[in-house]
Image 1 (cartoon, one colour):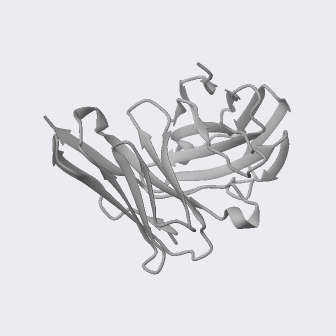
Image 2 (image 1 turned 135 degrees about the horizontal axis):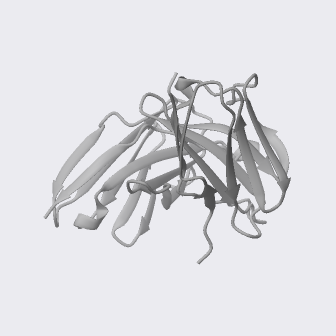
Length: 114
Length: 116
């Protein structure tokens, strides 16, 4: 039973346009969400996070939106650059319970076309 | 530039052999995580330690896998005996739990394991 789902295995976007990566979760206990980016032959690197008390967090070109009622979050990248081409993982944890374990989605491969 | 290091980066072995993967967490980090990545399951947590004590290894097949932290600078993941279904990329990550109860996990480059 997958608690964090990324239903799009891949996404292609033109350089300069907006990339929107989506993530759904089923566990209502999740209270902290993160996005990681992974290049081939490297480990995932932390990108941005959001607590469940917020509905938006922005860091430069990256914005994460959280819709708790829909159990949905999304990552917006504006404008998209070729260097953003990577696999993006959504992850969630139950921090209120003192747990820092992350449950990951299976990832979405983003290709930004020059 | 502090990084998590993992050795070996690649390992090919035959079924039944013992495999040991090593991880050096970022100096000062007090939590260490082991993950396995496969095409079918994505990234799965196998085990994690805080201040060298194992907190959760429920994701790990106990009969063949073991994880230890002999000291604060070394974490090991062993598979004995290895099986073809263990073929995957194994990631180690470390993090620092601060007073605000915030933590970010920093991943190593992974060990790509192939069991024939």
